[in-house]
Amino acid sequence: MGRWLLFLTGFGFSVAGGTVTITYLNMIPAGLSWIEFLLFIRSRPECYLFPLGILLVSLALLLMNDSFTK
Image (cartoon, rainbow, N blue to C red; front, side):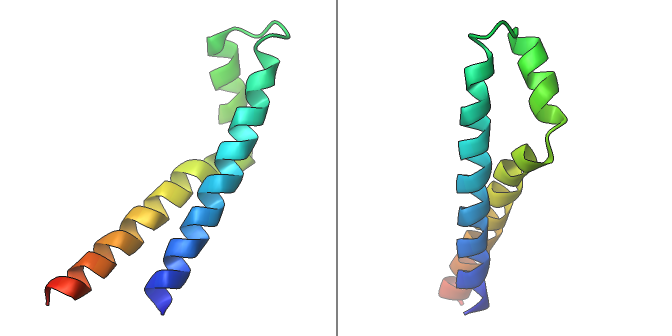
């Protein structure tokens, strides 16, 4: 049960962080260069949810795979 909770939490973080990052892509047509954009999202804490979510989902899948092989 804990592995599924970890998976769903990671999935939620990934969706939230990815959505915010995609939303911030609207700043590029407003005059930001790619470097300025990357520096901007680096300073936004909600953009860190995407890599954290990917990490949690990967960890949950590895734990689930490990339990199936035993």
